[in-house]
Image 1 (cartoon, rainbow, N blue to C red):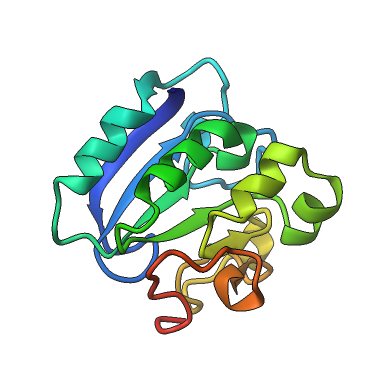
Image 2: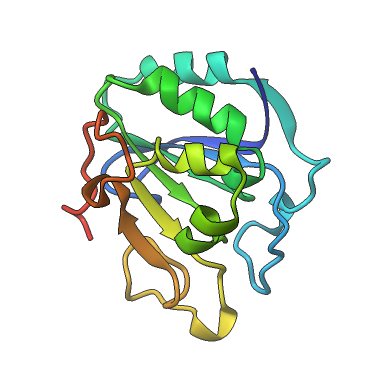
Amino acid sequence: MEIRIAGIESESIVDGPGLRYVIFSQGCTHNCQGCHNPETHSFFGGTVDETSRIVDEILESPLLSGVTFSGGDPFSQPEPFIDIAERLKGKGLGIWCYTGYTMEELMEKGTEAQKNLLTHIDTLVDGRFVLARRTLSIPFVGSSNQRVIDLKRMGINSGEHDTMAGKAV
């Protein structure tokens, strides 16, 4: 399945706990002032890749603790992220996802695909980046309005991923 990405960071320690593989989605409608990745906003930028190739690359690294979906906004193209998550199921990798939407917005107004993506994520970092609330004191968020939500503990995730969620935050 094709996915439009802004880039990949194969070994990150800042996008969730442990050593993580980060996929930066291309495309975002939030356009938050002061966004850390403004080059990811256009839906026509980045490159097109194959989810199967990305998963193969992830599985080649025995040192990874998990995978993080970032952006742009992964919920702008949920189907390829669902495909990646399903291919990684049972491989011992926790899945984190950053989004400008709140969990409530996704659950109440999201498309079926967006709601389905939620069920594949262990930890959701939600909410738009607010420059006036920028913080460096809360792990894994950019502004104090954003939340780190353990979807697995809440029963939203099917619980089939081995995750470090909740241990680091």
